Length: 293
Ligand SMILES: [Zn+2]
Image 1 (cartoon, rainbow, N blue to C red):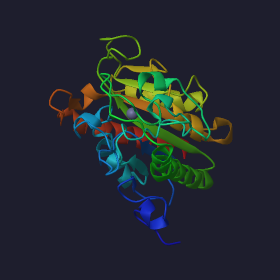
Image 2 (image 1 turned 180 degrees about the vertical axis):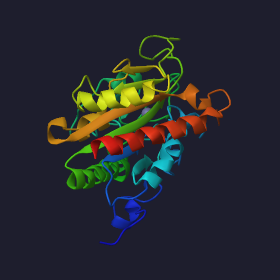
Image 3 (image 1 turned 180 degrees about the horizontal axis):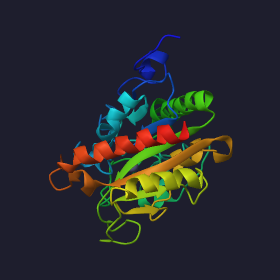
Image 4 (image 1 turned 45 degrees about the vertical axis):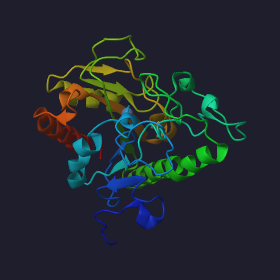
């Protein structure tokens, strides 16, 4: 079998490189698979928003793709969305349509999560501070085209990566990679100003991965002196829900990293601890490969 060091989904017809990128190999499959749905910053030409590109990076998990990039050298693939979270949030169900943002009636599957009330359904309506992203409503065709161009290939690519790992090892450990603000905002869980732990692991109350996986990751991080919370305040959302099935050996864990560990949120720049954290994360991933493969 030919070894393909790095295969972009564009090469296999899934999506163009301005939609998503897979860093690292598809084959031979590692037992660990990573995805970063919120680190994209390529502004799609059909966005049609009224805010600046800088404003439209609201909610971005800055540097998360870069932080995990060395995992490729461990043979671990990292799926990274290239489109911004404000354009389409891949961590939502495709039916999570915000009817307040829609022109007319939604004729397709509708599965609201309740995030529409905060302006943060599949397609965001407002920024965190409440500013509207558009001065218009979006057409059904516009919403559908974003689902087809971004949401569908993102989820399909993640499925393919996880299937390859599962075929090779009889199980797969999927880490859904995110970062969080140092303290909760006005709309944040726990109330404004609540300081957050260094890491929050989310397994949707033990339903998306085995307790062994969650505890293994917690111990790896806690060994460096970090504070780690589980399902508090973030339990995990659509990506870990949709792609997991622990009884069948498919484990998905959401991993939220506190941004203060790797960047200065005022300047937007990385801090020296970035490299330390990156090395610690790679150590954790190697340990997972050793323990679970
Ligand atoms: Zn995120």
